[in-house]
Length: 100
Image (cartoon, rainbow, N blue to C red; front, side):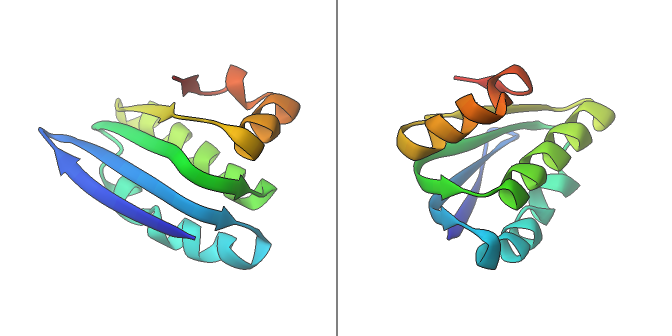
């Protein structure tokens, strides 16, 4: 699992790569901290190259979404495909996020 964070015109993009499984979830939560600190801005999580996400990873996304709502920012999750699309569908995460 890898996350690459870029600032673009005052907003942030987090590009997610690989697998976020139970073993990687704690690192993922740690890697989300810069986005949490900027939750008052617009944030995009690009899942185009994300192959899998476990429940702990989903919990991290939920925490970021809540932080954005609390601080007046916004979170958009983009390019949800493949196995991640199945997981989002089964868990109902499409109802919880702005997915594009």
